[in-house]
Length: 67
Image (cartoon, rainbow, N blue to C red; front, side, top):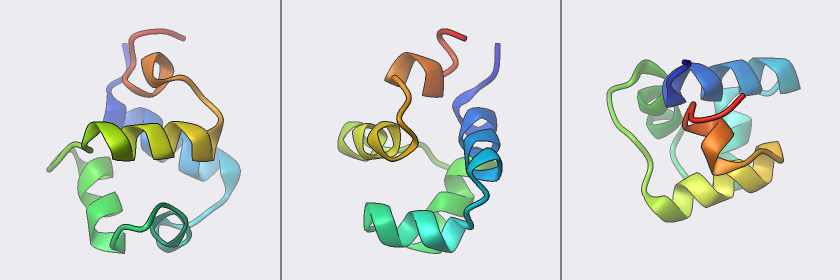
């Protein structure tokens, strides 16, 4: 099963957006998005919800609990 960091990066690349674009839309720093994708940190619940809405996916999908 894919982990959060892998799914996040995969979704970003599929949507052809930069970390900077996501960070502006979600209201985070670009460095924070980079940390999520590298597995250095994980988002809070409210940020997870914002990412799900942005990518139009479920939390289960983004967390790697479903396909």
